[in-house]
Length: 84
View 1 (cartoon, rainbow, N blue to C red):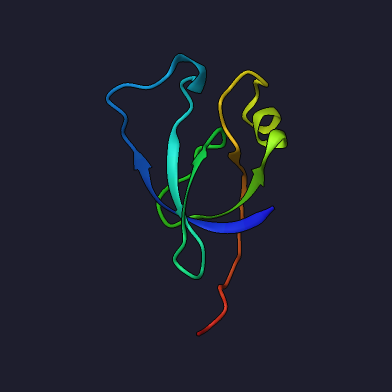
View 2: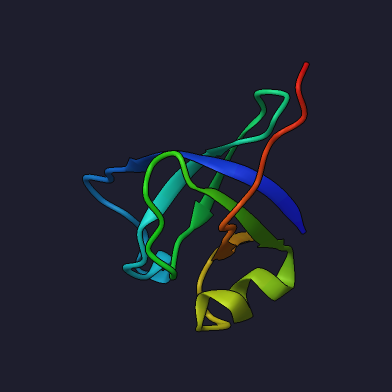
């Protein structure tokens, strides 16, 4: 699991059927690395979240058939990133 910050929702003109219809979010680590995750919990821009990766991400998304390796598992209520 990782703690990441939601940057924005990704809008897709078209997608593979096996991606399902969950929103996709661009997430950023504290070091600036960008990730894309399915969002079954309804995050908003700026939220800090924890993510579930690899094969467990499909379970967390609610359907083992979905093509994902990263899913938002929850919104963190109170998180202060490290000061650089």
